[in-house]
Amino acid sequence: MKKSVYRSFPFLILLLGMRIYVFSQNQVRVEAENQHITVFLNRAQIDAKVRATVLTGTSKLIISNVASTIDPNSIQVGGKGDVVIMGVKFKHNYLGNKKRNVLEDSIRITRTEVETLDMLVKVADNERNMLMANASIKNEKDGVTPEDLKEMLDFFRTKLTEIGTRQMQLARQSKEANDKLARLQSQLNSQGGNLNQPAGEIELTVSAKANSTLEINLSYVAHAAGWSPIYDIRAKDVRSDIALAYRANVFQNTGIDWKNVRLTLSTSNPSEGGTKPEVLAQYVSVYEPRPIVARGRGDYNGTLDGKALYSSPAPPEAKMEESIVSTADFVNTIQTTLAVNFDISVPYTVISGGNPEMVDIQNFNLPATYKYYAVPKYDKDAFLTAIITDWEKYNLLPGIANIYFEGTFVGTSNIGNSDTKDSLLISLGRDKKIITKRETIAEYKSRRNIGSNVRESFGYRITLRNTKSEPITIVVEDQIPISQDSRIEVEAEDIQGAEYNKETGKLIWRLTLQPLDNKELILKYNVKYPKGKNIQGL
Image 1 (cartoon, rainbow, N blue to C red):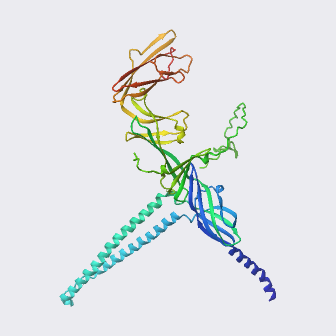
Image 2 (cartoon, helix red, strand yellow):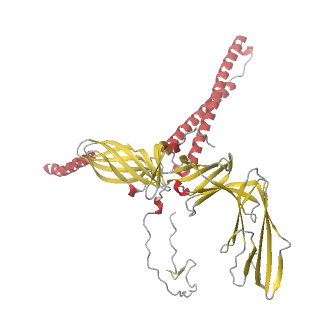
Image 3 (cartoon, rainbow, N blue to C red):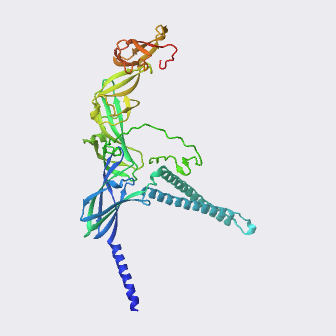
């Protein structure tokens, strides 16, 4: 008997130890409160606050409302509280997708409502069928008096009216429930993979000597977020400054909604990396092709007798009124060494997986010079352009610009900072009131044999007409062919004062046309080449 007690004693201690362990591991679930989000061109840094109370001993804080696209190596934890942080771990919770759970719960409840209504409709139909099955009236020989008949008619009328009213109500409720179910299902289907995205959680292990209240600062970088620039360019007329609205399309698919957060847009792109490339030794050698091995007993997948002949690399992983105030009036621009940050003081909400949120960054009035450009060789229309100098100081990124001129949308153009020119040229569209024409001078065009060579002469007449009521400045462009063969000679005979770039063959005339003025330009050149040769490019 004593022996049996003695053997159970260690087991009792083990149980006590397990109980102590269980009660010393406190698990607290809290939700991160996202406060400030720095959105890069690709990725976003999320700064959040977490408040929690932990008991004495070791506790695990399960922090939800965390991006599921987090970079685990970027997690930083700090804050106030008399605790020791023992570990930080990120994990996915495949049951914690609140959006999907809410939608699925709504679908489940609505589907139950539809099934209940369908059952009640069948009950009402059966009641009506049973009532009508017993509606036959017998004659007086069977003991039915007029009084009985009146009583029965009143009964049937009352019951049929009651059943009919109930059927109409049920039909209306059933239609509403089915419409709601269809909308919920469509919403679930439209979200696609967004609702299949697992929830993100950060597990924080802390040790406290006493009960403590914590205020934790949480920061991390998340993928599947960013912003892209978009511009609105408005020109009232050719005597006014350019009004440029600098905006951002902010998008995110991090698995959590950014609700009423302060945004900072950064021109930095973390995906490009910040490490300079290293120049390694560049070796040269004589290329000696290997002999081609005939296929023998091998298959057709690059193997011979079971040995690989080559290995394939692994595939890569996969018009606004002036009185209206916009968020651009609440943006503080901060120039850092490597980037520009636009700090927006107005809170924004950006839904995960939703449409991009348009954010106004800045509004500029840019002094501009207006010129017309024409290339009659390719297009008979003249194009109005605005030329902006010192444009690089406005921190413009490459992007699409919507162009408005004289209150009308004229199209889109590209704008950016990748051009090394001192000025930025913005096309404002076609102007049908500037008429251009390029035609061949037939009497000049000729082909003659000179010894062993052929000499061809080409002549073109370019005519311009300004039908506008004000003078214009126009740049006309054309070209002369360039020879890449010493046997072919190209000679410019008459370019009528044009700027001639012999390396590119480009010709430029800079003209001023008065109202209703006409101008004629002549272009002549000769090409000499050996007889019997077909010359391309003429």
